[in-house]
Image (spheres, rainbow, N blue to C red):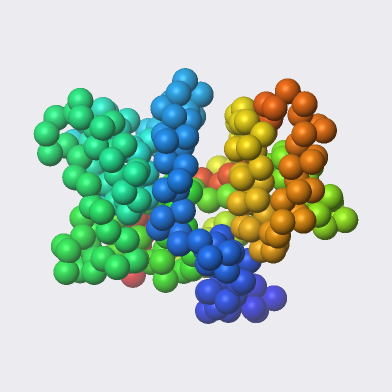
Length: 296
């Protein structure tokens, strides 16, 4: 029982966990800061289509419902991508510093903010991990620090650095279970002889350590899904990418198994994929933490 309340043990467990998102990406030979280069256009389209805008609006409304005021606020958007949240933050009156490292996503972000007032969005094309928060003058510099589904959150040290930048609020969202992908679920038994089971992820470390360290926060877990249609060739490459992400060696035999399955299961050449899972959102109230610190 004592270990359950020992923050140091939980910090070490998170740091040493070989199944975190960033650990899996690195073992698969994927650079987390450039992992969206090849799918930047598709991601941008999904972010700003009707479904994507509705999803963003739900999160924005939840934040404002929790007391986050965006008009005239300063926001640090870490992992801004093509502006899925940077744009609506700015449209609601915030001044946004957007951190993004993928050149294709930065190009799309520049296009997406072109209609905004000049200097309302500042793009920082650097890895957050490489930024010296104190030297940059970012200590408690932002009313809201926003990190949505970004592998920059991978242990408590990374969370602590993020929290250093926040003056009032910090929002972090992460998967609660491993990503669900209908095509990977179909193919997995063919290449492993076993069904693929979704597993809990590192969100539990984050919530428990926030609790142990005395932070005030609201959390929300939702189940979300989306669908997309790919050609058989695109579906083949996506399936192979996901199998590599799961650390399976992909050879020509496996590629042929997948290609044959797609030809039989999707004779039209169009593959409809459902993907999603459970996602956790946490809004940390730094002004409450600062008040607690001053009083004690």
